[in-house]
Image (cartoon, rainbow, N blue to C red):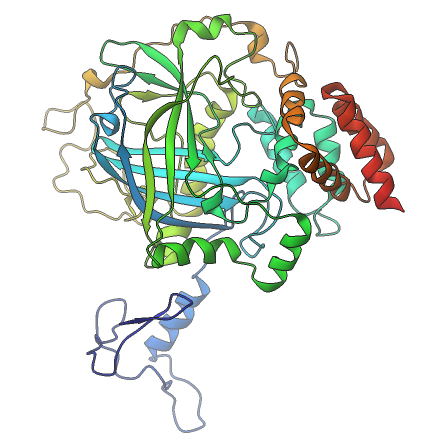
Length: 494
């Protein structure tokens, strides 16, 4: 077998090919000519193979993801390198050296499926671990924070990233209008317009669970946790000018880089870390540890190494294994739980519901989504039921006929956090400027210069009052930030 540079496999002339069949398994005698009443006569309705091919072609597409539509991915393994069993009973972390099969999908956020890979955007970082206790999905980004901290704002935010209903074009005005009216977005905006906002490919970026999750151990103790995936390939980024040239040559630059590296045996790896916060300590922090726009200071909550993630196998069929891959943060296993993070709580419903709409009611029965362990549930019927339940007496619960029963030993301990009312109002009692200002002051002169130019370029055509409102936020984070952007805007106007 030969593999062409594009990754296409060819076979020799001596290879015996399988017989082409209908979807019902019957051999197809002729796949080149349609049956007709004569050489020039009308086609016959009995030409079922033609009808089947056309009907299937009409249905080849499923609705693309509203967010993260353009993506790439691969299979791999997660290997435990350090013992964290004092924090969690999750079997995936049960012993050093343990390996778990997993799937990763990387993506841009705003663009459609036909968008270019090399665009300035947040990148999705979605992981599915096929553990021996069921599937665990970690759905994050290549940034540790996000633009909002309340799920009520998510649909409106995403609309500003999509096409204007009148012009059918992306709107810089809509983006900056929303951001300038939502100061909690400033931390994410800082990262987006820094060098890391335009990675050269998926191998050269970090990943984060972003949300605060929780661990719980066999003693019923809970710990809050943040997940970090640090690239071992090193960070590489495009400038705006370099990216424009790349897009003109290859709109699938990140796909080509990931696929080609795995085919060549250069398997990308990430070192996996966690930050750990004892449950009660959340009450004593100067910031809300469940706020998606905030990071936990590493000096207070240092990174604890957990393991290594390696991607080492490309999908055989992109649609079946990547387009239908369905991730949801609601998929957790014993020892891993949620938190009061409001955006996470909203996503627990929204992600699974999107898959039910986009892929189908039984999307988790598809091979790419199916866990490696047996599934026993009482979900009934619906379109595309992929299995055939045996015996119908135990079709409800509880029952007296030997049906699946609950497992009290896997019950998660109760939340003991009392909280503060200000934590649960995204408008009040929040400091949206300190952490972005700290990040800005970490940039060297070259990074600042590119940062100012990136923002100025993205503000072209935006009404003055919106620009001034946003400059006010920059000034609150650091006066030098606002001055630098103002100068870059003046330079761009010359």
